[in-house]
Image (cartoon, rainbow, N blue to C red; front, side, top):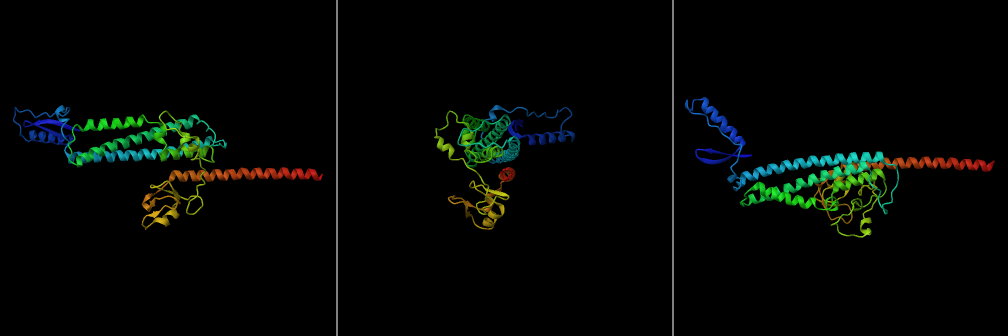
Length: 331
């Protein structure tokens, strides 16, 4: 916040902290007898800014520092929202697991409609994604302005410049289709995949099939949608056994067990991704602990064990029935 005051006939624009300091200095001068008996203390008013000063060029160094500070605050807010996405993914998976009937779904056919609870979770998750996108848009606008200041370009009416650029980019995003907004979102893919695996297990359909097409989406064949259907066995591509403390790469979409990928990358120059056909070069610093994936691994293990238990009981029942038939034949 900046304010204007008249000091010795000159117009000056100062920060609120400077305003408070000047007021304190003036009060101290009066207490010390600096003002005459008939002289009234100067009353400084900073509640209004002269409109002429709103369109003045921004001082590059001061503007750069302030914009950096705002961008840093936006990034902190984005991290908090990303944590909320993780919490929502975990909660949605647990809710879906409690709603599961064990029914298997053929992903080659039309998918079942989401229930009311899943629909509500989906809406709230998308709202968070939209807020994160808004932060990204506003940050990009601020970075552009910051770069102009760094190149000593004259930036006038900085607030309107920021406001108009932000509104234009936000409208473009808001007017886009759901597939355009969420199809390439890794958090949304993890969210929907976790729900599907908890509800139905088996093959997971292509995310595109979970997002209805809207006017403005490009046309595609049914075959294109079906290509993405896959069943995840959650095995580490290095150890070939189920993932343990899953680690995922920021440079590609592949995941590995912690100990295996650490042994491959730690204290070494960037290495080729172990997945055949992947051109990414990975360093240990590119890996992050994928807690969302690890939750899916644990869920998969539980379902596998439950399935084995059901098959065991079914087998025991069949054996008992077979033995009863044999006894009847003997009689």
